[in-house]
Image (cartoon, rainbow, N blue to C red; front, side, top):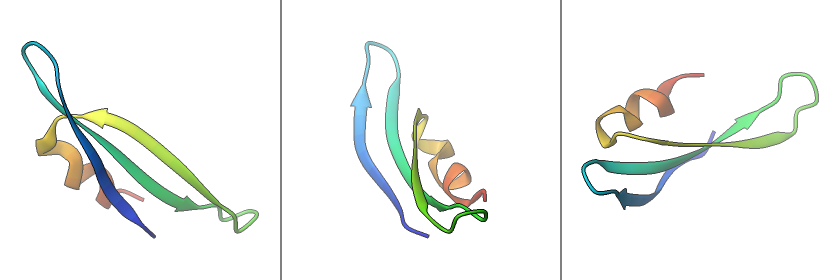
Length: 50
């Protein structure tokens, strides 16, 4: 499973990070990409979830 932090985004008051995770489908075996924007402190937590 590939995981990568792509960009660090800044808004007026918060610092945000866009994270992309590649997930393998158990049914078909193909890979899909999940993207989310969240706090930098929560990125490793989100990437470690299955």
